[in-house]
Amino acid sequence: MLYSWDPEARVVRFSTTADRVKVGHLRRDPRAALHVQGGDVWSFAVAEGEAEVSETTTVPGDAVGRELLAMIPEAAKPEDEDAFLRQLVAERRVVIRLKVDRLYGTALDIDG
Image 1 (cartoon, rainbow, N blue to C red):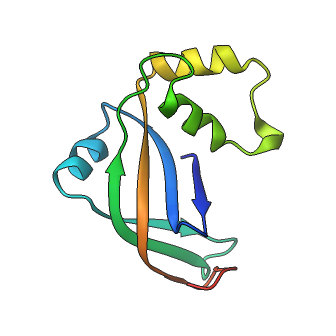
Image 2: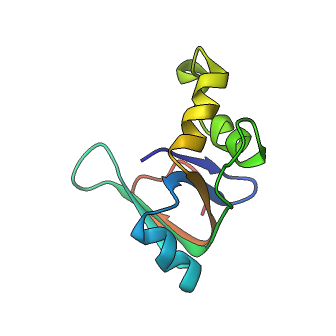
């Protein structure tokens, strides 16, 4: 699962498709937690808070598509950005934005 962490805004963004069960669950009840495993069995991080689900990207290059593109690290950016944005529309991608109220674990390199 592709995700990105904005420590200043305390928001985790991740990409999924509009037809996933988790999207329906989050639209009904926005409370969520994201568990990220560290490098070994003893390291992890958990982010808890309320999530919001974006609209589905419907036009290549719309705001949701640009937000999804911005989540990709520079080293992994697609060579053909237009094709990538068309693919996001075809897959009916959305952004889930988890507004983090609580952050804990053993693999944190930031203050929680």
